[in-house]
Image (cartoon, rainbow, N blue to C red; front, side, top):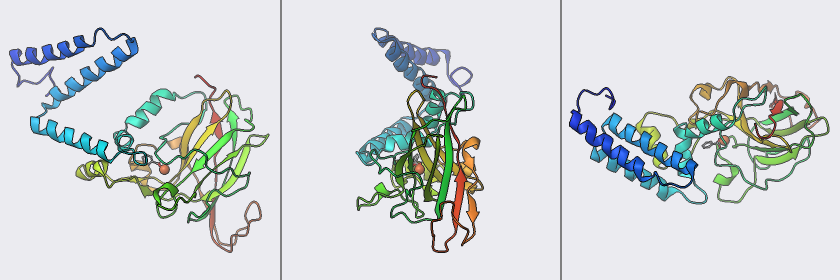
Length: 300
Ligand code: BEZ
Ligand code: FE
């Protein structure tokens, strides 16, 4: 039932609707910036096409306005419901896809999420990002290279993750710093550190976006992951995660962030298995994962 094909509307009605679209588009004709003009006229074109395509009722329009109002009301400096809405509609991942076109064998990007914090503590190579976060210890190792295969020394590697209860440190009220840190690759581009084995968790779903997910039968759960942001001079900054092979949520991540190339083997180590750095884990099990990172050149 599109405006092009729908049989229900008369020629007069179609002309009335189309002339309104033309009038709105024309009203932006004088926009000085060509890019702004393209953006606003694009929004008008697609918005009117949607309204006409679904034949939006006035009650549905009011409910839509109420929904967006609620998204605005719950948003503050700690909670960004608009980004959550963008994430759950796949708009964040589409914008990432457009802006991070595949380049040679560069590592793929995925969604940033709301839980990155500037000034996370620095750890040395081999340090532990967990702090007070609960979870199974996980040894993470890899290299940072450019697309010519050259090691990238001194790359800044930011890592952050939720604890085994499904919460990031910033979701607690006690100012703890846990499950996050930054470190630098060594002269051979290598890095290794301790983290905790990622576990699944729900995106915040106690607000309007959560109600949208519930009303549409969708789950708020994210596939288990560990976030990375890797930057180095002359390289495109990489924002990504690694995911746990075998996680049943890989096929239905609530923000569409999973890419096959980012799914890694987190290999379970039986209790008592010696650790790579001789750390004594008191007989607990642990896991290990390898992640070799390839940075695209800046400006591609
Ligand atoms: C996250 O992975 O931290 C995240 C991403 C999108 C929405 C909410 C959380
Ligand atoms: Fe996350």
